[in-house]
Amino acid sequence: MPYTIEHRVHPEYLEVHVEGDIIPGKEVQEAVERWSKVAKICKSEDRNLILAFIDFRGQHSITSKFSLVDGAASFGWMPHYKLSVVVKNEQQFQHLAFTETAMNNLGYEMKLFKKKREAKKWLFTL
Image (cartoon, rainbow, N blue to C red):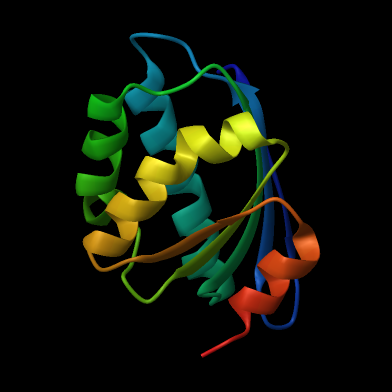
């Protein structure tokens, strides 16, 4: 598994750090694995607000992004989860923009940010 997941449970939210390589041919399987782990942590810690810091090398195809989002419920991702994602740079922001749009169009709450302060502020807005 060419990725790591670290998390910290805060009183009101879950902080998750995900870093790794996107391997062509395994990108959907590994993404499902990663987000299943995060969903299990959310459930076990009773948190629905997630502040995620993501740093991936490589990128998903549009098909794999949609497949992941479309199957989110099947691996434990709940519609009441609110996901605030901080990325390292503009390139990662652009790569994940489709995912953000697809998630929101399918009834999930997700927003991308380049700065932690803005991401955390949005996470706590109604």
